Length: 545
Image 1 (cartoon, one colour):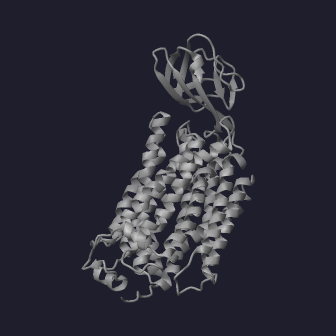
Image 2 (cartoon, one colour):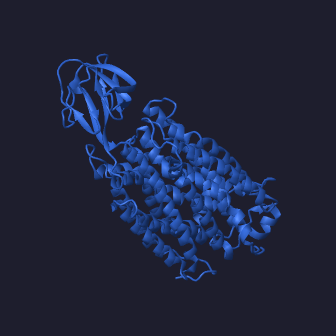
Image 3 (cartoon, one colour):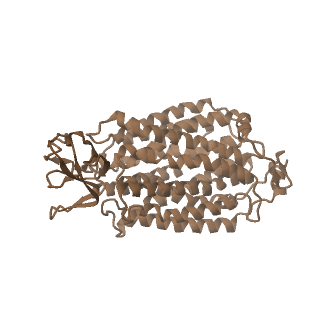
């Protein structure tokens, strides 16, 4: 098997440049998904569950793309066809997701539409992202892989910066940053539009500049008994896992703690910053489950208000006005006799005229009001200027994280011990997460997210470098697809546990303590830093600890 030739800087650059556009899409998703679903009317305790879909689709899609692309040989190349398909779907869905609240749907329907769009978006992003990781494994020798993945890390973070700051910049130039209840602001919607356009341009650039090796050349440099005349024998993923090098599992353990932490960051940063640094006002949400005179069970979610037919009950701005079903402190009080109740999916209030507007309403007569169940919870007012300003600021903080990651990616190769640099990066990130949950000054938070950027840089550079140096067969695409499960599984675990943990830390009648989730993320990343020391590398091109 021949040794892969050294590639010039610009060839290494071109192999990964499309990552810039893909990462813009990923950044827009990461920074705005929680904001979008909170605006649509989702409860903070449910936010983590919406984040199950992205890693779940990655868990399914990435191994399939990796394995299938190992067997794909077309005139467009081996990996690039998957970039074309993924990017095309991503562009279409990027135009749909931020408009989920603009079709006049009820809260539940808008959230379902948003979930479908999110599932398709993350699936397509994963499909478009995977080829660039595999191209480095296919065409770059072991000596240059560290540089190649550093370039990929730089482009990844540069794309992130662009995606993160879009809403802030669009607000600055005059786009509206607030909207009606349940509607996503213009700044977010047009950020997704511009991101989609840039992604398309990056795909065209990649197709023009990347020339993949034909099957016989690939076999000369990568070998593998499974590559025969451009065709490949069937790959058994279970057998590959059994034969996986120890590095695959030890690096995967570190990945678990890291991605668990970052899932919490993406989910709870908006709520944390809005409350701690922008003093966002609160509002009361009420979920009503009632039995009507016709023995029908009706359930409805009221984002801000719930009103009796005679206008005696109003919940506004977190304060409950005494009425026949609710006392002034927000507790349910049974009354005698049938009561007419208006259940509203979305309710808005004009503070000037005092008028109450109910959308998607259902008027029901309760046979026995004492059997009605009302669950009240205090949430952030997503229509407020403070909340949407905080949403834009989160984009700036994520951009600061990306800048810190770019700077730290330059520093990482200077360490003599790759393992120590990996440990130090994650430790600094842990400090960043914990401080992000505690600080109340929006500018001091820059320090927190610079430190988080150090962890992000190491997470992008070292795992794939360490792993690909331990892989010697022609199944590198399949292994990288399987290894991406170490990114997806911890996010699924975090998404499933997030709502439960948040419920344990607070109570429904008080604002959810989302800042504590940032501290838990810091503890998880600290455990990941300790797990680095169990990694044993098989790399002769880098001095080891």
